[in-house]
Every structure is written in C-alpha cells, then in structure tokens.
Length: 311
Image 1: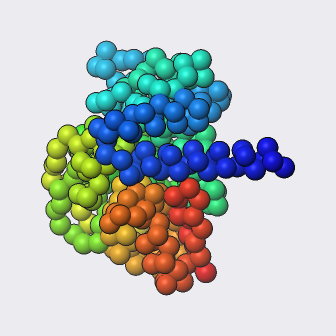
Image 2: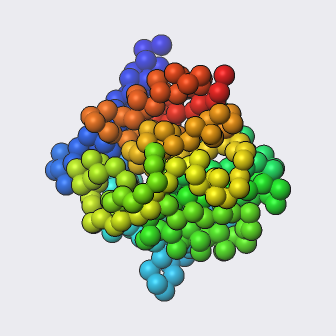
C-alpha cells in the first residue's frame, strides 16, 4: 500500500510539474529548462508514442518538412518548429526511438501522441460513420484526417484553422489522404464576426487569438490579422444544420468560441475541449465548466480536457 501511495504521489508531482512548465513559467526561464530536463527525462509523453505501433515510417523531405506514415495508412506532412522540442532534447534517447532524430518536430509528435495514442478527444464519444464533426483548431489536420476516415463519405468534417502558416499543411494533408468529405474554413472561431490579431508561436501548436498567452507563455514570432466568426455563422454559411461532435483546441479562446455557438449547443452536439490554457491567471476549464453547467450540460474534466453533453 505504501509503494502504491508513493507512486500516486509521484505521478501527481509530475503532473503538477508539467502544468507548471507548460503554463506558468515564461518560455526563456532558466528554471523552466532545469525542471523540463527532469520531467522529460523521467516522464516523457513521447516514450509511449515511440514504443507504440502507430508510426510506420518517418522521412525528411527536401523542403525541410517531415513525412510521417502511420500503420493505418494515414499520412501527414508537418512543418518544423522554430525551436528544438524540450521533450526530445531532454528525453532519454533509448526510449525515444526514431523520434530522437527529429528534434524540431516535437509539436507534431506531441499532437500525434494525443490524437492517436492517448485518443484524448474520444474518451466519451466514439466517432461513427455518417457523423458531422467540427474540428476547431484543426492545425495540420491530425484529428481532421482521423475523423474523416471514420465518418466516411456519408459524414463530414469541418476543419477550422486561422493560422495562415499552418493552413497550407492542413489542405496538403487532406489531399494526401484522398479525403473528399472535409471542408476547410480559414477562420478562427469566436464570439463575433470580425478580424483579430493572431499570435504566431515558435511551436506550430501554440498560435492563439488570445493575446495574453503570448509571448509570456510561449515563444512568439509575431502577429498576423485573421478573420474570425461564430461557429453558428460558419455552419449556416455551409448549410449544415446538425453537428454530432465538436473537438476544440484553440489556445485560450474557448469561452469566446462557446459564446458564438448557441445553435450548436441547442442541437445537442457532444464536446471535447482542450481547456488547460491559462487565461486571467487560471486554466480555462475553471471558467468553461460552470458556463456549460449553467446551460444544462453535464461535464467532466480529465487532465484539462472538458467533455460535455446536454442533459
């Protein structure tokens, strides 16, 4: 019993350390590097991915991008991060396998681990043929491609991504996987229609409409102006009246997006929202959960992901 308790306490310590590293310390902090070296050496999320049977092949392309083929025949092309991933830099080489040879693609591998190994968005809702799925914050399309293959020709995926530097890779990956059931929307989801500054980060997964996140949390490389609109407006323009599932990972803008999707929520779509981002000093799930409960939704939070369904 004592060993079990110690193990649980150690896991809690590492979980706190991960949150502290990711969300509370500024990117260039020396303390962040010291703590990161410990965390990623002993409890690196990429170890499980490296030891899984998910990746079939990895190949650097002449343009400096990475081609990854999975054992389910899905294919992805990813741009590099502008910085070396701490997860690869500080990880134990013998446990990282082939991943260690691609130090500038940490963001891609972390996304791949979340979507394919951990399946973090599918804990309570299982995608099925014929579903209409919204991927808000589609990035280069890992969840988009996975969902598109599952829902099939009778279903549809609306992939929403505002980052102009990422959008081309999203479209490229859809074409690479020969999917004809995906609609790409080059906007951000928000509480109103308009234009906003989008923070561009050194890591391809960290761009955000919420200016408070960058540059304090992540290494910012500048801003671009992007179009934003409500999810209800976007779906209306596409003549889509029913959505089964919404996956959302939009780096701190979650509550603003929810304010613009009354129609989707009334339609009883199930939600999986990455809500571990820090806004106004606390993780966004602490705001999102009471907001959803007030509107009649049952919610559950696991490691910063909010799962929700209308009661």
